Image (tube, rainbow, N blue to C red):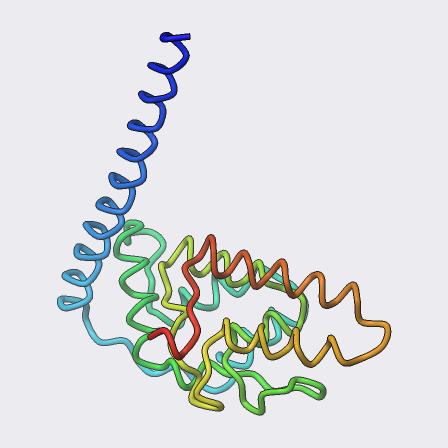
Length: 192
């Protein structure tokens, strides 16, 4: 019995240490990325056609969006290491955030942010990818409606709950909501 308690205590201690260590590593990496961003050469503003190309990739659930984002961010795949790639894509996102929008029939946010559009198009893998690979901030309020991605998903759940035959969609949206909040750190605008 004492052996089990000892192992349980060690596991809890190690788990806490691991979580703290991961958070510290993440902060350290972000500090390095921010330092790199300060020294990056200029990169031209992406054209509307290139921005629309990312929307098209989301429409098709095509991971080509990663190449498109990197091209718009002036990434050199031959020479840029992972931190430089993250820095360049984050700079692109931060500088042109309001230009990352899509529009489509049925999309409830006119000129809504591309992350919301990916949920609308049932392609939340886009969000996972840009957060995990580039560290993009998904908690910026959208210029179109002043709401965050998490606000949008919550609004969509409420809207769908009022429609008949949408139980499956409501379940999917609730899963997306939980994943965004619990795994990716998404927040409501009121929490920022």
